[in-house]
Image 1 (cartoon, rainbow, N blue to C red):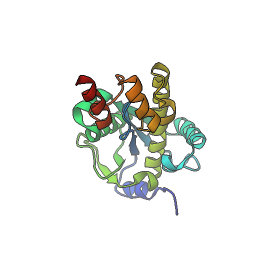
Image 2 (cartoon, one colour):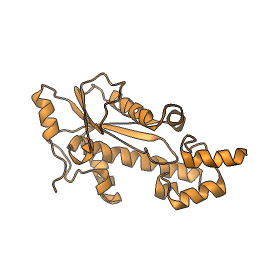
Image 3 (cartoon, rainbow, N blue to C red):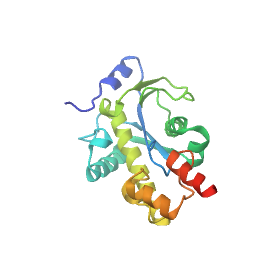
Length: 207
């Protein structure tokens, strides 16, 4: 099975777009922490070897590729907060993080390739949604790596402030250890109250 390539970028260039950004987000599933997006414009002459969907890479390889990308590509990272996730819903918050990451690129891209099946509704640039884009487009794969590294680093920092939940290992995802800690230690300000396991614990506490 082949990995991501530049075919989607080449198609965008054929339409006259020179600056093409790949965009991906990470963190829709966790019970805690923000949702994080990255937008990356690759230099076709300096693409790090081995770019792939971040989920297919080991932690060490992912970290090395992220460092290489920071050195040779245009990169923007942005978040949507737990409060925004709870007030908007996770899909809209993920799209908001994507919009913010794209807005952080200066000058702006001329075309955006987005992982998923929807273009964020607040986006005014030409854009194309690509299902499983992180496995198809090198630019989106790069964004998936940067977003994953940024969010994992943030969750490791939060784990120092709120020990016991295992965020340095589970990144806020609902592992058994995390769910057990929720029951034993309670809900932190970084937990998503709109997510059922957290909501149920708060409901029990209030009754």
